[in-house]
Length: 451
Image (cartoon, rainbow, N blue to C red):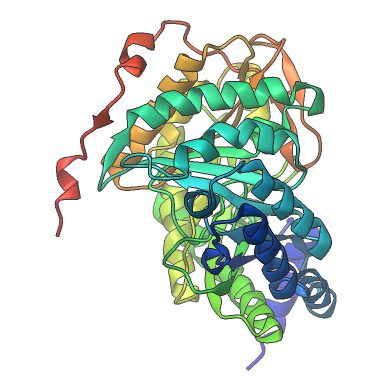
């Protein structure tokens, strides 16, 4: 039976509390587009994406209009392109350009999957793709890239860690006149998941169907509003309130996902319930933590509050849908979260505190601007530290840092749009160069032996 109160509550969440479907992402396998001739492979890719995703954007808009639910982004994720490079050889940037052309043709906001999975070493196609990432991101508009350099099962590929520090720095240098979009569309993962609908790290895993619909829901403002109604509640009630709110948000995502799946005649994959903030007022994960009782995000107790939030979000989500997946939890991107921006500006939130927070939240060090003169080996050290947290804790972690060329800590950089603005955060200048230069592989931890 339809409950009028629930309907009115959902309308209020959308109108007043920034509740939205952050993305409908169509995952498309390109394995059948592999070819020894890269030109043939590119032609197959373009034809398949245009055929499969022809109605994706219109379907999203139709659902948005009919149900009154904002759907912010329509996106595509594809098979890691390094797998196709293994078959074709040639210049991988050709793949990036044809993917960008296809993305524009079907009208999606972003296309993810210019990616390589090198957690245990480099296979054919991997290294050539990785080295092409700076050029690929500098010469396209809608392509996103990711590289998985470690996992709990395999350990951490330190040769890849060293290389990715250089790639991040080079990507910043090549796009300094484009607002540093290169590193903002590049994620370095440990324990990357195959069904993540969120950019910039989305790719369509080898274990996924030929084509699938994944939906990412976001509602930090809704959670904060719910907590504001219980200012004197104990922690157990706080957790229960977050859990119940996450349940309601996930139900909305499930509705949209199933409707999109039916209309597009594509299997429904997962709902990713991630509290993904925006720079908009009232749409901040940091403000949720402050609603719990912190003077400001970054204060002592922040990691505990975030652990509570992340766990409660997951518990509420899995009760609402049998297919919750992706990353599902709380994102803490500095530049995209108004509360994080304020905390970083005031000096309460440091990069070291953010690293501690990543041990209990979804993903990791995300959209953090660092001084432009930060050496590549220091960036590699940041990547290695974050990967170690993910490896040991059997969770996904990631690094998306932006070397702000020409700027120093204490200054700010304006990205605009969803990426917002970010204070340049101070990074330790002590060098890890010798450690990074050793190469090799950090062995998998003991908990990897669970077979």
